[in-house]
Image (cartoon, rainbow, N blue to C red):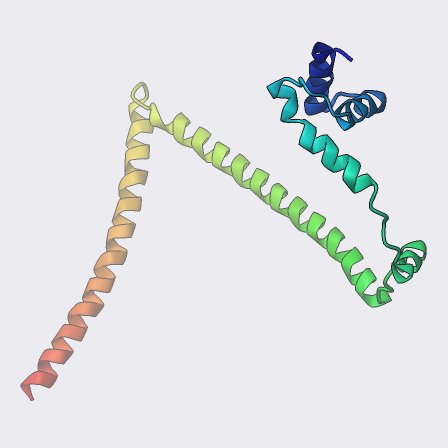
Length: 168
């Protein structure tokens, strides 16, 4: 066989695209002792001689393993465990569906809130409407400030009580 043909076969062999006949041709080529073999082909020769040597080694026989392979055993699963796992799948799907529905509902409500806020923002053309929106915003601010002052009054009572205790 020509060396160029062997190089082509080796390239296909290394790429994994060679056929069984081509691989057999490579094995028979490298099994012969060729004196003027080029250096790039000498690198592959030990590999194919190793394959030839390993092919001659007989395979040990393990009767126990052959019986085990011939009769595969499937482990018996308890019925309760199977039923529980079966229902867990449906529960997980239901939970995911409820979560997605909740997320969609929240997104729609946020969208509606944003739409209302945008519609209330531009009230310059109608002064009465602008006044009503301003009053609503100031009432909201007043309520939140009153909540804070109520807490401060409780703190003031607490401070007065501690001062009286320290004075006695």
